[in-house]
Length: 258
Image 1 (cartoon, helix red, strand yellow):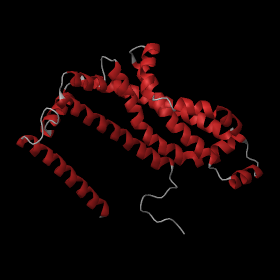
Image 2 (image 1 turned 45 degrees about the horizontal axis):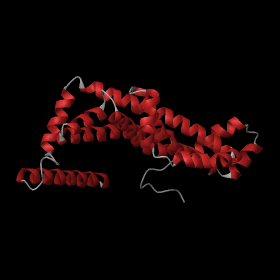
Image 3 (image 1 turned 120 degrees about the vertical axis):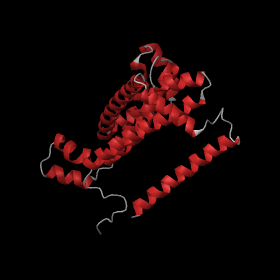
Image 4 (image 1 turned 60 degrees about the vertical axis):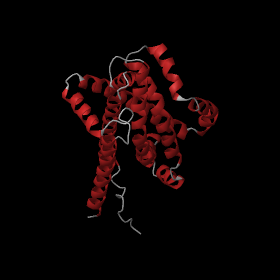
């Protein structure tokens, strides 16, 4: 019942927001040039979705996002677990990691374009740099948070290093890693879009940049809405995966055993 009430409130807020926006534009209180009417934005979204060529742009951005997300996550988890298990190496590399992490990722985009060209891989590389550190720090911290008593008991039972990784470290770090996966989805999309902004002939970022160049606010807002839906769909997929992988965690609002 509570979930139904939440949905009703959410829908009501959305209706009030969009209705007020539409009324503001229609009455002239809101400048249509800067904030086009929601009705016009929805028409633009429908026009794009009905165009077969639009899915080429979606496919390109999706490819860049997925590749950047998968590669960045894989490298981040691998490096995080490695340094989490190697305190000495982590101390040696700590200043270098902090220095690289301090570099704004946006300034790397032109460098990747110079190195990799205007094709797909320059966008993937930027997405990888955005995703990597999110998963890296979470994976490393997750491994370090493993209870030493559990490790000692597992070693006493004869567990090898591979057994510790499989049955202790990875399950303990799973919550940390999966929480970072949600955050890094948005970063992967940002990396792909920024790369397309700098130079591309296709993609959702290219559509938004083209609309911006033509002072077409309707196209810009339509692209933003499509990107938001794009990320929400990926987030729903991750939600399903999280429920499958962490079956022991209680749901929100569920009472924990005493």
